[in-house]
Amino acid sequence: MSTTDAVSVFLRQIYLQDGLPFDVKIPNEETQSAFREDLSKAKRYTDVNKMFDDILGKNWRKKRS
Image 1: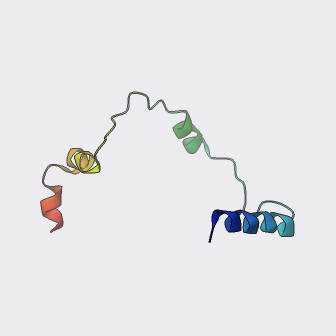
Image 2 (image 1 turned 120 degrees about the horizontal axis):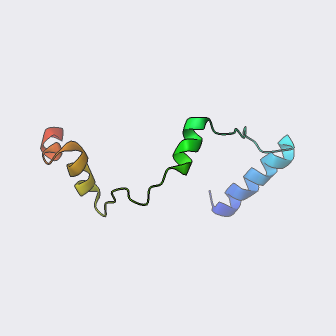
Image 3 (image 1 turned 90 degrees about the vertical axis):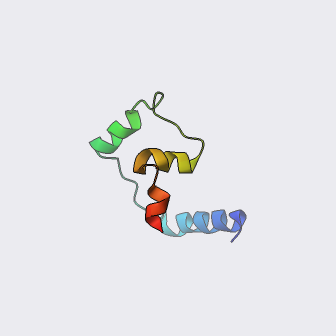
């Protein structure tokens, strides 16, 4: 399905249902708090394997075998 087709289906559903085809909910306090969390000093990775090494230990790949 192309992007154009997907948008057309979505807009048709809005028309047919006289509104969004899903419930819109206000996030709970925990989710709102997560949105406000400052991640500017969070650890960042450029390599997913280095991230898993840091989280799971250097031998995580051997344990999967």
